[in-house]
Length: 112
Image (cartoon, rainbow, N blue to C red; front, side, top):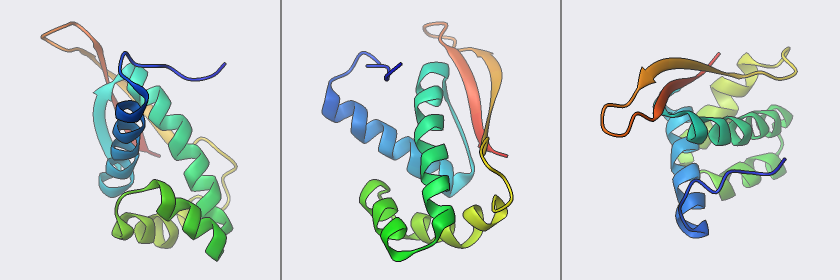
């Protein structure tokens, strides 16, 4: 199916998604729009699956995508072992209503 363009240029979109994924793993919960959350969910699920491998190559792949080394350490040391027996579905979307300014659908994206 591909990906959403989100109405912004490629560099901005990639940086925004990297920031959101980094924030999700750091805080374990973020509040964002539904379309952004769906894109972040896809990326986050793949990163957790990579982190479950636990080897050096997987760690370097995560370091190449995430902005903060502390977040990568948390991903490999606490988040990935928590999902060792789970084969997918590491995140959850909870709808919280519409944003006041433009009525965009807002959701909370959190790790299960």
